[in-house]
Length: 140
Image 1 (tube, rainbow, N blue to C red):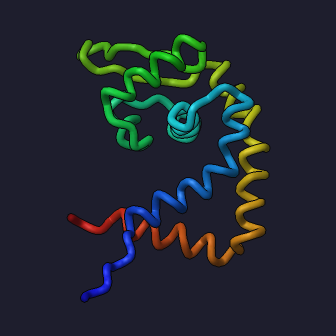
Image 2 (image 1 turned 120 degrees about the vertical axis):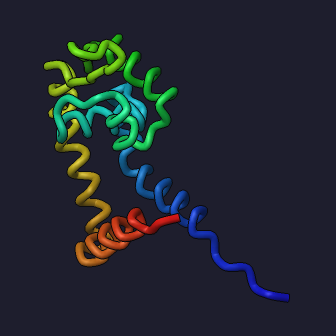
């Protein structure tokens, strides 16, 4: 009988869950979902983005992105605007409240990264990030 290869996808999911255990309590304190936080963080880093670009960067399916952005807009954290030349294009940006939300969470998120780094090691963390970036470039 041949041995089954370890599951890359399962290992990645389990590692994600282990990492998210550090961040979920802070997200819960701020009444944000993981997806909402990804959107806020990306908009903080990138500035205004077209909704399909935001969905791609946040790894959120376009139909789900509509709901995520709607809830963030309802809560006053983002605003949407239609393109001036093409009304089908929708752009999303952080509001002042969205930037304040990011700022309020920044130190707690950084503290969680430091906890991971302390347990895992700076070199191994950098190596992991490098390997994951290389894996993202592998063609199917």
